[in-house]
Amino acid sequence: MKILDKKALTFLEQYLNNASPTGYESKGQKIWMDYLKPYVDEFITDVYGTAVGVINPEAEYKVVIEGHSDEISWYVNYITDKGLIYVIRNGGSDHQIAPSKWVNIHTKKGIVQGVFGWPAIHTRKNGKEESPKLDNIFIDIGAKDKKEVEKMGVHVGCVITYPDTFKILNKDKFLCRAIDNRAGGFMIAQVARLLSENKVKLPFGLYITNSVQEEVGLRGAEMITQTIQPNVALVTDVCHDTSTPMINQKEEGDTQIGKGPVISYAPAIQNLLRERILETAEAKKIPFQRHASSRYTGTDTDAFAYSNGGVASALISLPLRYMHTTVEMVHRDDVENVIRLIYETLLNIKEGETFSYFD
Image (tube, rainbow, N blue to C red; front, side):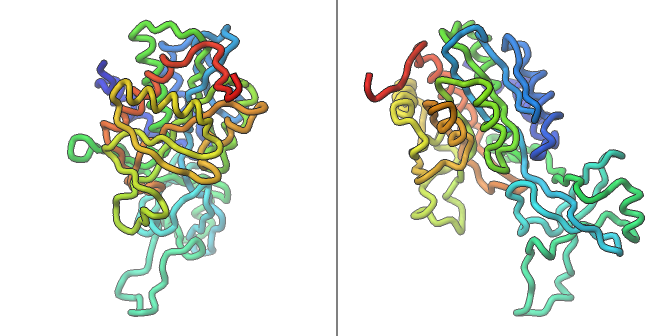
């Protein structure tokens, strides 16, 4: 089956290029819902912006496939008398990559562009150079003073994103900011599309869930799981490609782009559900990798697993290079294989399964 057709890639580019920082995901959610609409029976939304496309909403047995829609960003925190702007994080934004990056400041008057400034190399003393830190990076929007900044519509609390857009590198590498984790929303939407195109009749309700606020503590998933009250949750997020320089594989494990979806081991991962995923991958000859996550996965899997008295949950990750930068990179084959694995696993789940150790 053809997965990444022209229409799908057009949607991916549009969806990634849209700014959806944590707490401000609504515009991206509307793009996602517009794409998903032909493939679902109805939508559920909540007050903070999580969106769920539902297939077979009347079914009592409920299966979730989930990604998260938000991206890391900054907030305006302080404006100096000279019109320079200091920031705080909204999610896990990386201060070390900030200097010389363009930014978009979102205001009621529209986008105000600026740059993270940095002292010229000529003015820094050898051996005494300061590295970028949260308390010394600043944004310059070309204003002469604080009054002009405020006249442009910029105030404390304005959210700031990077404008970097979607690129394809060497034919099969997808690059953009916010692949973590709008790739997840893209992939679960493709699963819904394939189910529709292949006229699959699932014996359960399927809840295609695009959660908000994952980057600040899994908050959207915490809320929506109480609304859905699912029996099973298949979560997809990104994980690290650990083959690039300066990553300790003894600590981070060995996972690489181009080698397939990553199946996680952690207390929140329900073992029988994970084994079903592994059996499916082997039966369908889908390449996969394994990763041990210790106490928690750090993804929305944790929120689903420990909700509603316990939900059988598992995590299928997309390996990614340069997480939380503006050049996040994934392999086209991995994107296709995560979609395939979620799709085939759904076909391998029976209505009413408890995934209980005691049956």
